[in-house]
Every structure is written in structure tokens, then in C-alpha cells.
Image 1 (tube, protein in one colour):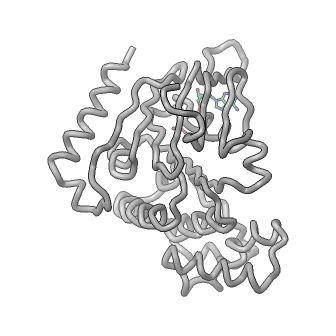
Image 2: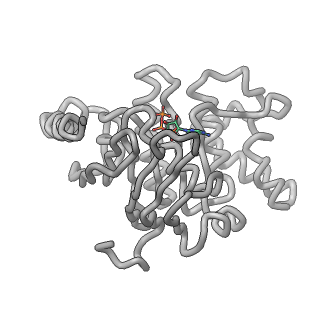
Length: 259
Ligand SMILES: Nc1ncnc2c1ncn2[C@@H]1O[C@H](COP(=O)(O)OP(=O)(O)OP(=O)(O)O)[C@@H](O)[C@H]1O
């Protein structure tokens, strides 16, 4: 790999994943490195292995070949030491707990005393703009608000890495764009490394420092795009010619990668 391994927060080294059953492997020989504090997207069409790759980083799945290093250790070590938080496509909140109780849960499991975890949960809910909803039940919130709760929960243990699997794909476009902008604010305040899975070219371009473009069947890394757009990024950027140039060039990469 070109960059010094010591600067890398996440290293994916010749990773392959074969789920068996005689079909093509889901992923073949993917290698990539993600720097500390970077915001990267894994972008590709449905079925190209984005979730598979993210699950390997999160210690939810073992590659059948190659290896993944995260925060200087294995995914297992990173999980046990709470180096990363994870946000899924659907919020997966517990209905029997209040919004605050959901955010507190990982802190409770980590043994944090009640008063401190309550204070931390409220601070996080303020950070995602939901301070006034702490005592509500998840179902009393809109889909976008619920996803903000799951982001607050993922940030509860102050992870240095945030793994996000299509976190906004179930939301309407307007909410999705607004949450993207909020996420950038959170990212710049926390300084964490973000790995964001999406199949939206515009979303990947708007949010990321770098976009890893994956192609389908079997999933391979087909391109790596450095996003040079200035930060902070605000909604009006989406109307700028430079943004359109970037999304068109990413789209072209997909067309070139078509078998
Ligand atoms: N548990 C499993 N058993 C067998 N095959 C699987 C399993 N999980 C995923 N696959 C297959 O592996 C490939 C990659 O799946 P994956 O979910 O990682 O893709 P993805 O890019 O995240 O797709 P999407 O955008 O639709 O979520 C697909 O062909 C999928 O059918």
C-alpha cells in the first residue's frame, strides 16, 4: 500500500469474501487504507459488497481471505475497546426505552455510573438537535429524528471511528440532505474517522474526502476519487458547477467499469 501503515486508521488488505453456495465471491481482493480523521465513502451499486466490507471492519463478519486492521489492532480488539460506533440503515432503537435510555444503553453496558451516563446522553442529544425529545419513546419521533438518535447512540462511547451503513437511505431526499450536513458538523467537532456506505453518488461526493468506488460481481475496488471540494460544505454546494463536474466524473467511472 502506498501510504505508511502507521498513518492508517483502517487497513483492508487483499480482502475476499465467499459466502459459499457455488456463486461468485461477494468480494474479491479489495485493498484500501483510510487515514485517521478522514471521511470516506464506499460507493457502489446494490450487491457490490459495501455492507459486507463494513461488517468486516465492525467484527460482524470474518473475511474468507486477507485481513482488516482497525485502530492499530484487529476488528475484534477494536470492538472490545469500543474504538468504533456503528449506525445501520434502520435505526434499531428499543421501544421499551426512552430516547435518552437508548443513547445511554452502550454506556450502561460499559458500566458508566447512572448520573454520568445520563449527562452524557443529554449532551449527545443536544448535539444532534434532540435535547427536547430525551423523554419521548422512539415511535413518537420521525424517521429522520430516530436516525439522529442512533447516531447519538453510536457516538456515546466517544469512538474514534464511526461506521455507517446507508444511514439515510430510508429517508426522503430533503431530510437526507439535511442530515448529511448535520453529520459533517458532528464529524468536524468530534474529529472521528467516518466510513459511510451509500449508493448515492451525490451523497458520497458531498460528504467525503475520498470515495472508494466498488463494482459488482464480484465486488472489487474499481476507482478511488479524491474529493477536492472545499470545506465546510453547505447545501448550496450541490448547485455548483464543480459539484456537477465531480458527480459526472464519478458516474463515468461506473459506466467504464460496466462489464
Ligand atoms: N449472508 C449472506 N449469505 C450469502 N450471500 C450473501 C450474504 N450477505 C450478502 N450476500 C451476497 O453478497 C453480495 C454483496 O452483498 P452486500 O450486502 O455486501 O452488498 P451491498 O453492496 O451492501 O448491497 P446493498 O446496496 O443492496 O445493501 C450480494 O450478492 C449478496 O447477495
